[in-house]
Image 1: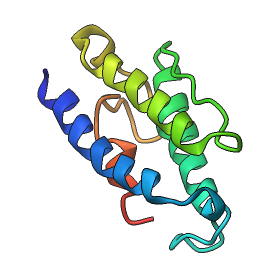
Image 2: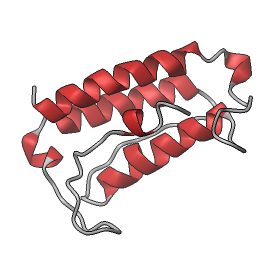
Image 3: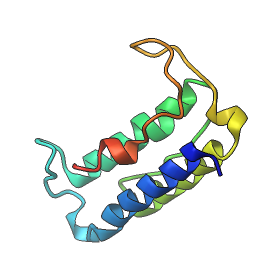
Image 4: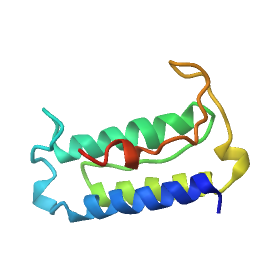
Length: 116
C-alpha cells in the first residue's frame, strides 16, 4: 500500500469513528461548524473531496444519499476512494486547481474536516 493510500486509510478510520458515533436522530443537529448540521458537514466532505476532486481527473466516486443513509454513503465513498488511492496510475493524476496543478492525492477530507 502506498504512503498516500495508507495515510488516507488511517485518517478515514478516524473520520469513520466520528461518523458512526452520530446517532440516527442527531444528523440534523448543529455541528461545531457554524450554521452547519452534522449532515451538512458530511455532505460537504463527500461532495467536494470524495465526488468532485476525483471527477476533475475523470474518476468517479458515487457518494449515495446522505439524507437516506449518512453512514452508508460515507463508507461507500471511503471504500471507493481507497481503491483509487491504491492504484498509482489513478492516484497520481493531476488537474488544474484554483492555485495551480495540485496532486489529487494530497490531504484527505478526513483530515481537513476532523474538527467539524
